[in-house]
Amino acid sequence: DGPRPARRIRALDPDVVNKIAAGEIIVAPVHALKELIENAVDAGSTSLEILVKDGGLKLLQITDNGSGIQKEDLAILCERHTTSKISSFDDLASIGTYGFRGEALASISHIAHLTVTTKTKDSSLAWRAYYIDGRLAPPKPGQSAEPKGVAGRPGTQITVEDLFYSIPTRRRAFRSTADEFNKIIEMVGRYAIHCDGVGFTCKKAGESSNSLSIQAQATVNDRIRQIYGSAVANELISFDVSDSRWGFKADGFASNANYNIKKTTFLLFINHRSVESTVIKKALEQTYASFLPKGGHPFIYLNLAIDPARVDVNVHPTKREVHFLNEDEVVQEICKHIETKLAAVDTSRTFMAQT
Ligand code: ADP
Ligand code: MG
Image (cartoon, rainbow, N blue to C red):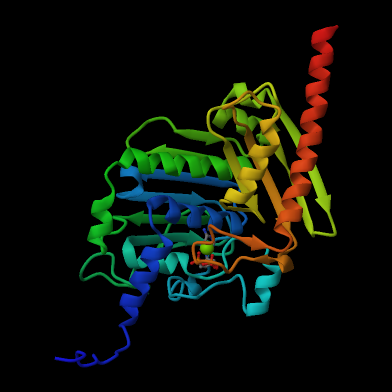
């Protein structure tokens, strides 16, 4: 017996590597959509139209009116690590845009059928290209893989079909397309509240009306009202706090002591990217505990801008987690500020009730 003989080590085929990476970055349809929304916003769009079929597993389509993509870039658009947003590692320290890895479109092209139709303002035609595994491919057997000139409006339309077709175990793991759609509409709502000056629609294929519709000129309060309802929109306090010592600026809207729900609604954006943070959420819930009845929770939309030099966005390819310097101090400052605001509203309420 004894130890078994060592196996030889071989390099994986790049297509296999890319497919593994894609499956890590895009776990559910909502993750693909988030990347596409961020790209559209990065391109300066003021209108985003989203169409979804079968919870995004059959179809995810997003149409924007942004800068478009130059025809000459279409050949490398979906290669891994191609980006117009950074050119050196140091650029990460001053990154002002959502994307930076050049991985989203590449990943999607390895796990879905991807069609890009795009027109810059200087081009007379829109160009349509179809991609498989990071490369231009013929849309149908026998057709050319070259981008095709078509009529179209300025901006970009990205069509993602049959997501996870190349990872059947993942594809089969989705039990409910309704659940996937709910995650999508939640994410679209988050960006619709955050992206001031940008109009959003989101529609299920085959339905006549939109599931979500926000006009470009709507205020943040209007946006919250349309998405989360008047009950919360009528009971919001706005806040605005900054501290140069810790290199942050935070603003947003939070519910006052007249409002509470069973579970906290926490919309967190760090440097304009929707992220999760249990640490910040817990601290805010703690702050509200003395203002709300037992079991009651707040609604909070927090827009946090951290000096890019203090942020490590490079924790994980999904960018769902972000770390920054003096996290505890920053969170404490924000909580203290919101607490003062809540106390002020609470005192005026008690005062009014007494007189
Ligand atoms: P990243 O966003 O990290 O650069 P992506 O794979 O998401 O990587 O996109 C690659 C490049 O494609 C972007 O840098 C951008 O130049 C271009 N691009 C993607 N989506 C759009 C869009 N909707 N409008 C204009 N350009 C886009
Ligand atoms: Mg991107």
